[in-house]
Length: 167
Image 1 (spheres, rainbow, N blue to C red):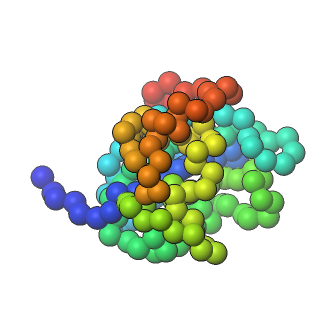
Image 2 (cartoon, rainbow, N blue to C red):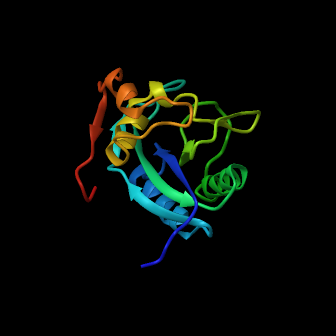
């Protein structure tokens, strides 16, 4: 068995355009191909209403756990490249998108600068992030000391549906 080293990282995956399930699966394949990254777990996929401007299609969301030897900024650059490769165009904030990849938590690093905030600032308010995160890391303590079980206990599950396995 190969011994994988690196920092444990959780990546949020979301899409609501151009076959969102296929976009999510393609993103996982791209993450698994990244040098310096090893996927540990992939959550189920969940469907939820879009949060953002105007009328948008529903989102498909999930979370991927991985080990990485990449720095947070190297990882972010790779995630943005994957998004662009899958047709992401950044025009409207919180608008519809083919792919959204967010670094949710990066080991024990707390960071807040112009490019990256860790843990992800919206994590605690988003059932479409907390539910899949809790599925693959039920006892996770975020870098800022918040516990996923505590955040999940305060979260509404309204408007989110877990997709059957194989979907």
